[in-house]
Length: 100
Image 1: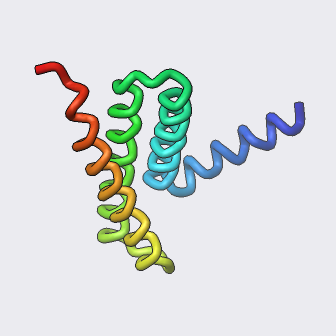
Image 2: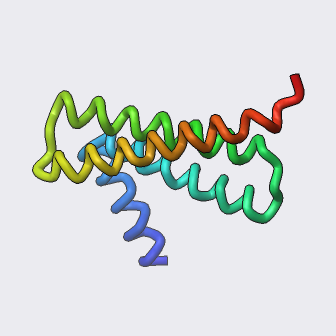
């Protein structure tokens, strides 16, 4: 029980210390879970939702870094731009599954 309390306290503390980064982290974890579900059950809505979470979090990271730069601004920006490019490319690739 002490382990769960430790993780809960850590989660609460991190959400209070830096809320935007916490929301971005949650969005990326949800995207990772949805990608795992998509790999097991290949329905394209899971992939689209996952890619939209990644796009949203990477745009949020880029905006946050523009407003309040962190010590590792270049690495963070490069990672966010790479995530954005890969997600947009994946979203453009998924368009073929839509039945117009």
